[in-house]
Length: 64
Image 1 (cartoon, helix red, strand yellow):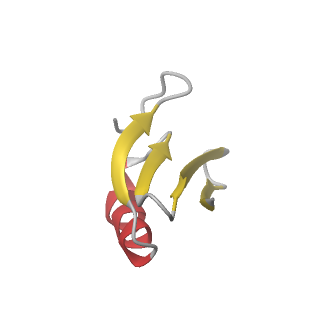
Image 2: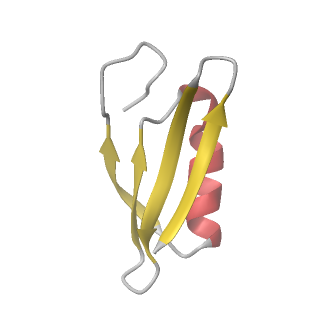
């Protein structure tokens, strides 16, 4: 299991990238526009391909 939180203290929110290193598949939970490149860079560095985006709730700063 690969897991990395991205905390946003200014808004009190968080996003997460997680996935399976064996299979090479990952997901982003509650992504924000400002860090799309960071999620992709982290996933690539761990050998993950982002295949899913999950919104846990509707929020104006989430970007799915």
